[in-house]
Image (cartoon, rainbow, N blue to C red; front, top):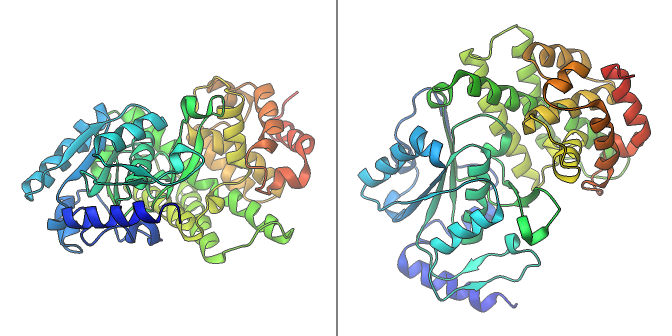
Length: 409
């Protein structure tokens, strides 16, 4: 009841101004899957696609969020497209995935009087009051998408995903990975609930253009993240069998199919620039995001392998050169060995892609076996309520599994 008066004020003020005309405040909160998904080599102007489903005249002041690089890749073109449709877009550039960046967007896109909903953490609050934007377009990689989706959630307006790489399943998920900074010092990145995107637009031509080494690194990372769904759902099933969780089988199939179809394509020996593989990865990442949106949890795509990532990257702050997807691929391989499933096709695919499948591979990314062992032991403290193969077998047995698999010692 504390938020009732600010909510009523928020609704009235933003309906009068047109910010909530047809879109807010109800739809982003209840949207379980994106309304529009386009994955193609050369997609039509995004505003034109949206116009087929919405009265885009209601999007009076869209906001384009990007970084310095992605502005040139796709942000500027989108900005011009929005302006050509008679809109008056804003532009904000961000640097990194810190909460302060999201807070800066919210501050720039709101005016007084302001009121905040009651919440313990600042990133869980919602802003009530006049807003200057009616929709957020996130143009970029993981950090840009994470900051933009959180800012949209705090502003209580819809957001549209326009990824410029395929490095992880954040392209379509309702979760943002944020560095809280001084607001929660020493905690590392945290996962924050946001809105499901209203639309996802993946221009495969733009993603493949540019630096070849960067493209391949992002592809390998995205493949690692999507294939890790196979062990994540194995953990989910195990938790359900132990009475520690409830299983949504449709969401499980969404997440599992994302990993299965990629392993099938990779098993055919295709190269990273294969058009069908790029399309498959893009679709797999979107499917993974939809599975998470369906259950309102990262459970379909996050098990032991993601606990290990957070333990290494956020808790222990291990210095390394691996992306998110590469680290979760290591965890997925260990989990596959422990579960007794998917190990052979996963190991063969990872080895051919250059993902770490032995000690030499780990060290090529700046990871020592001792650090991985320490990460396994520390992973128990990451999301302790999430039951995985780690909790089932125990830390020391999982360390043994890792040593056996990577032939350590």
